[in-house]
Image (cartoon, rainbow, N blue to C red):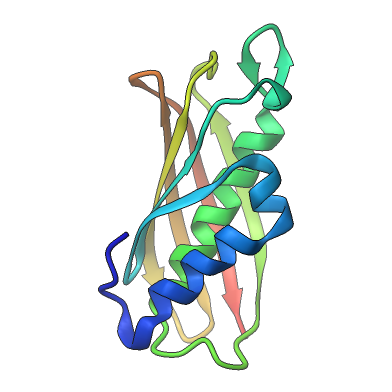
Length: 139
């Protein structure tokens, strides 16, 4: 994982993914954390399936939300005493994620004083499976 963020924020954010019980349950890993840009992975596992070999949309949505959250936090110089929450989450499913490891690439499109607008692309099996738009409030 690249650590191009100020004061080791990238390490803290990667540790958040690693130690979050929910992220661990879904198998998420931080691949890259840079200012306003994040890449997370979620390997395929049977427990993520909804029917047959299709990854559940809820698992994909959680990956989108988590990637945007980390992207929003990645632009901060320090995350000491920082708070935040997702304000809006829209996920468009483009193709079925069939028995595929997934990668989410999130980027901050616009950063205000407290609101971040993020775009997230989710890829798996050589194709785009979902696109997300996330509004995140840092407080």
